[in-house]
Amino acid sequence: MSLWFILLLTLFAVGESQSAAAFNQTDLQTAMSDMRSRSYYGFVILLKILNSLPNQLQSNDLTFLMPNDEDLSHFSITTDELHDFLLSHSIPTALLLSHLLHFPNGSIVPSGLPNKVINITNSGRAGLFVNNARVVTPNVCLNSLIRCHGISAAMTFENVLPFHRVPKPKDPSKKKNNNDTNPTRSIKNMSIPPFN
Image (cartoon, rainbow, N blue to C red; front, side, top):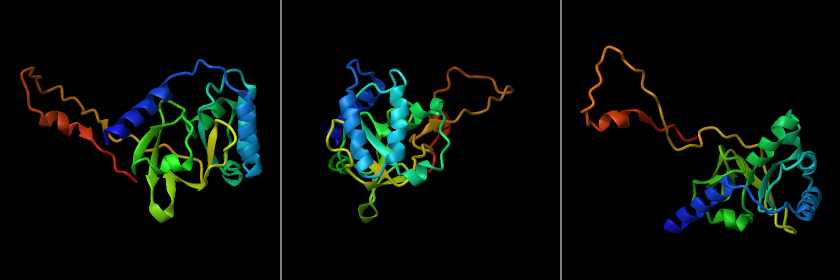
């Protein structure tokens, strides 16, 4: 269990850091060729647009999670939203399907955006899920350092944090007592959202 904790902690650290190394265009071109060979044309177009903008992709050590063309056709993505959309659909380390299957059920890994995380759920015969999307075409990109998997839908990022504080409204009529050490008051302020 502690090994998984260290692995997840490392993934979060990698997700927060920026790579100082130059982005290898050859790897991206090879990955896009692999994507085209499996009919992920829409995702390739989005990557080409993002790649044409300066300093958008920082590292080749990525796993892209790609919605299919039909699903992408339902989205209106502006160039301002493109960076966030593509990086939210990536994991900042290269992972094959066999690597993803070794994560404990319910593992949370960082996406390419620091404020969004991806929940990995192995549902046995129903398949492997990343947030709300099922991995439908694993290991599309095998000829470069970049890895990618086809998913059934664009991912949503709701209710992914395990808990959050809910501020309690202040009652001005009550006087604050600094000597109050009742721990249940803090516990009452915590809420755990339901998992879907």
